[in-house]
Length: 353
Figure (cartoon, rainbow, N blue to C red):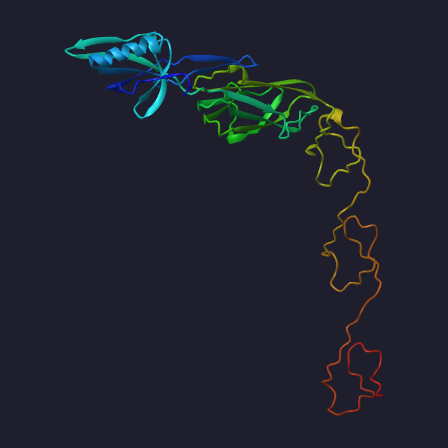
């Protein structure tokens, strides 16, 4: 409440009846950078004015007239009064009232305009989390813009909405809250009520879909409350898209895998072709050389076998180890070992030491 406003005299009664009066909403049309138009209500359609009635005695009516004519300059000034339980700032609509007299009572009827707390939304846009601008956007690379909505004045901004028109040479990827472009290509974020204690942030991720050009993204924040300063409700980000930032892509889908994989050497199907200095240069090529052993006979000497795929030559046998056994079952207990020779694959009989 401004300190210079007059206050409703304490000796006068509060209104005996308060009736809300609805005000028709007014619309605003916002022209986006792309030429698209966004229609929004400028003010909340809830009651902004109130019809009130008082019953005054003759003395009270005299005091009321003096307050109206002197303190309020014939109703031209605002004053503070308690409606229900809240002290609010009001003014007489049309600087007028009507009255009628019945016996010793004066019935006064007037319409009061309720002065809402001031609302001032500010929209700020950043090209990155650090706020540093991008030097140049590279084709295909992912980038993000951050939009911050701040309530600068004391009043809450009801029904706040942020509308972003992403540049035509950007491909949308994702956004806060899972929002996607509507049928007009606009990103519309419903922020609800924005208070001075909350500053909602919206992040939009996108990729440049051209190799060069200028990308212009515009954004505007609107509210159903009356905003006292519309000059800070919009933001524009202009960026340059070029090939200075290398971002070459190769999906490998155009190369052969079966029956044998292509040698990378010389392959050059990456996109865009202008980004690749040359085709792939193969340095070392590793073969997978299988051998199932299914064509060999069990217990064959490996030496010379060569049915595997991509082997430079056949197997070369180096050593062959025999398993030499002796069960001792054919010997008589306590026999002298010397000369016994019933084992398998022994070169000679036992020599007793």
